[in-house]
Amino acid sequence: MAGEIPDLIAQERTGTGKGAARQARRAGLVPGIVFGGETDPLPINIPFNDLLTRLRQGRFKSTLFNLKVEGHDDVRVICRDVQRDVVKDLPTHLDLMRLKRTTKIALFIPVEFINEEESAGLKRGGVLTVVRPEIELTVTAGDIPDTLTADLTGLEVGDTITISAIDLPEGAKPTIDRDFVVANISAPSGLRSADGEGGEAVEGEEVEGEEAEETTEE
Image (cartoon, rainbow, N blue to C red; front, side, top):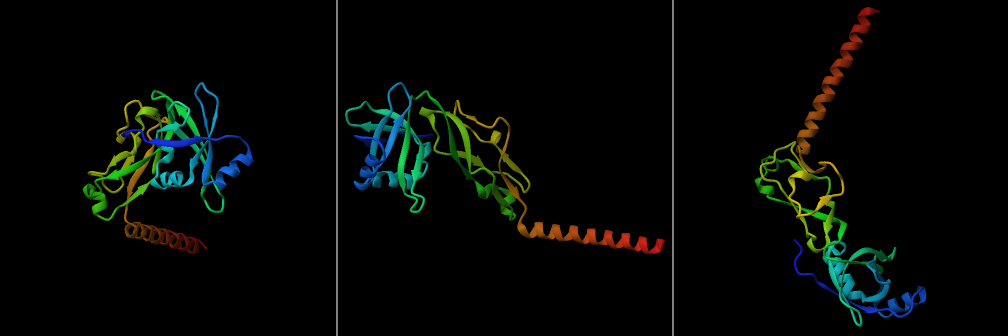
């Protein structure tokens, strides 16, 4: 489960519009907006280097932050969008949403697979095929998990891992209302190729037999 809520330090941005945003970027800041709750939207700036570091650490959009802006009460926020430069892929704007600890929100949570060495299927050369590396859950803002854990212990070739096999945080619920597949253990590529060749050989024999029958009838 997520641990202590990290602080996110920002400055209130004076002025709005493209001109103010460009000025912020020239000063090494990333403009953003804080919305939601019962208060007006708050334009902010966040130091570029700080934001880039957090983005590279991963899970930025699934992390609950304690936003600190001078002159304003601290508020819990979560990122809803990060706009990036289409050429440099660097952040140019972000949207933050105010949350209460009890607020329900839909987030994509990454899946971690453990105990690969305990899977008989993988030991025999099977391949772990991940269908959903992330799962969208409706979670409580105060209980956002860092990851979901899928245990591979005892799985054989052909076995699947569905969402029902993964322990979810209390109160969390998948946004998809069925027992969908998260991953499976597939046969080694060499075995699949051999099976495919065998099937083609049998099919060829059947075709030749049909041609022989047609020749006899003529």
